[in-house]
Amino acid sequence: MLASSTESRVLEPAQDGVTRPDPGLARGRWEAPAWAFYGVIGALVVGGALYLLWRGGVFRRRRPDETPASRRGRP
Image (cartoon, rainbow, N blue to C red; front, side, top):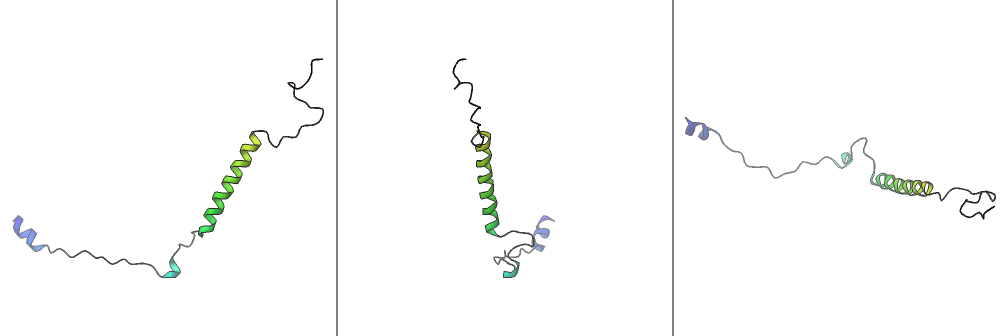
C-alpha cells in the first residue's frame, strides 16, 4: 500500500522564475519615497540634539543680577 501511494504522486520541478509587478507598482500606495526616511532620521537627530542642549542648560538666559551663589562673594 505504501509503494502504490508514492508511485502515484508525481513531483513537479521547481520553478525558478520570479514574478515582479509592473514598474508603476514598484511602491505601494502609502509607501513614502526614500528621501522622506532620510528626512525623518535627520529631524530626529536635530531634535534630539536640541533637546539634550536644552536639558543641559545651554539655552537658559541669565539676567545680570542673577549670578549663581557659587560666584557671589560673602556678604
